[in-house]
Length: 406
Image (cartoon, rainbow, N blue to C red):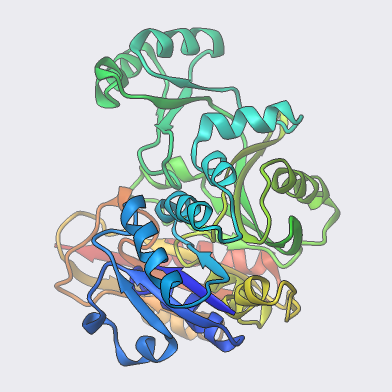
């Protein structure tokens, strides 16, 4: 099978998808923005060919690159795994007659108001939401729903550009900040109370064949706005616990309603006083290295497994569920440059056997802003057979390991 893969070089883990495809027998032609000379020898060794474009989100340029390859040889699949690449790839795929995620599905997974409307129509519980394109439309939605509400770009990934609006002053400020007084359109949503997590899958022909359930501590909006918090993402190895049955059934139904065929998915959810509520979905893998947690927790190569679904249409490995796995982000106490760390030696003595990865930028490294996310600065990843024990370990790291900046 010949697979075109969008942007094999950046971000860095993109190369792992290429490796996975090559490992299951595919010929892989990359389409990327860097000159071929910028690709390292290992990556070039995995590639059958390479097409350079000015930017992979330029739909015309991407389609032209696809057609150049099709002019030379048969193409079976065109795959993309980054949120911003999904819709351009779907348009190029449809124009070129290549099977895979449709434009309709890609758009519904990208446009939050349209996504939620489709799911509500199908009976899936979601927060009230609306696309608003003027100050008056926003004020009407806020009056109907009641404050607080949440505003986010219609096509944002994760919590990028997302804000909680709690009072009239913040509402009026948001009108200017989001450009609603200048014709911009944003997604306005009901604020849902409750614990936040995500449900990720690999699907084949619309059927979930691998599933993973993870939790945020605390919820994303709080984690992305509060410096002193060392936020955690923890994936459970108790996926078969009865309490997750409703979530798994909802996830399968979302896949069916949105027409997702063979793809990775990333679905956000809340559970609170009003029960389970679906938040949003991307028809692509999760970000911030979460797939590394799944691999470490299940003793398998998830990139190769993704490639098996794409190339052979079947799973190739089983998930061991041996470990729960988690990541904790370490924020600097101020913006500046890394000065030193506290608590690392004690951490290694106490939990060294359970640490499977870490990123500790050396002294002198510029710090990243808190709102840049979970991997903007230092982070540590651990695993343990018992989920509750892992949570206690991560909490201990958050209390005792400090990143100092100057």
